Image (cartoon, rainbow, N blue to C red):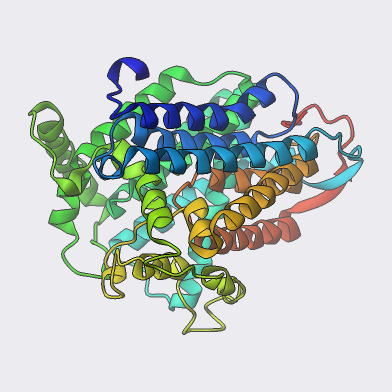
Length: 454
């Protein structure tokens, strides 16, 4: 299907797309064939490079097409080399068997389902309260609550989906879980950021697949079609409802039916009416692309634009201090802002209205060139392998597995720069630590049949 619908611009872009695709899917093959065991964190991460870097070459991205064929090929080889080096490190570290786990922190299975379902319901309530304008919290406190809610949502979606896949949820719990996760995804839509609902859907599918040992194809395909349909009207909905900078639209729960109906009508008009999308309403592939940024960064950096020499990494320690202690703390997207301002994509004022995701690979090249890209490959390969190996063999409700689930929930966020990634991971880990202190107990984990990671 991909070969039939692709329209490659030139031979170089076709070769580049094939190289990236093969390198991106190699970790998945190594994991499927059992050469590396444990959670497939690096395979999930590397797969995102298919749509972020390979597809833009395969489907003639309009901005990518502006670059010369040799420039496209060099960019493709950069991505391919990054993936191959990362895969080599991940393979060497991840294939080693971990030490047997005898005792670990784990949630009580009898009470965990109730706690996790409450977390899903509380997450939906928090989203509704936020979109309804019911909350009047200090920025520091609001950021802490929001980060905790996002972390607990991801943990609950993963763990309950895994238990659904293994058949351990009773029929009433299955109904309640499906209702709550649907309500949670619905509650994210008024923000007009589909990535929030998509993230929940992906982490739930990930957990179910590991538990059932099969992918939920029918629900998965239905979800992909639904998100594609909503995407067709997202741009127009933003033009209607995003009227004030730095102010989110306000929707009460009673407004949801009319809001969803309006969105569906606009999407149907754009999808079935044959209207040509404007630049703001780009295709999913174009919007997911990071390839055009890499080509621009490689072309300009070192000559027209200097290297950043680690500026976006230098701010990382400040992002770990909670905003409640430092009200003037910089935004987690500050590194992304610096990148876009440095290359002239945005002004400081522009960053208040929208953010252009840069991705870890492009950020590394902007700071240190190919040396930075190689260093990032080594770090990420080792990082994902160590996390997966540490959690391997542990119960799904253990601290180790739930931390790995948090890492998994961020592994497919291809557009994240280091600042966003580190801040989000740190905040989520703090939330997990709070759960561990309040609800987990150290117990015997050897021989636990509910392991997700063997």
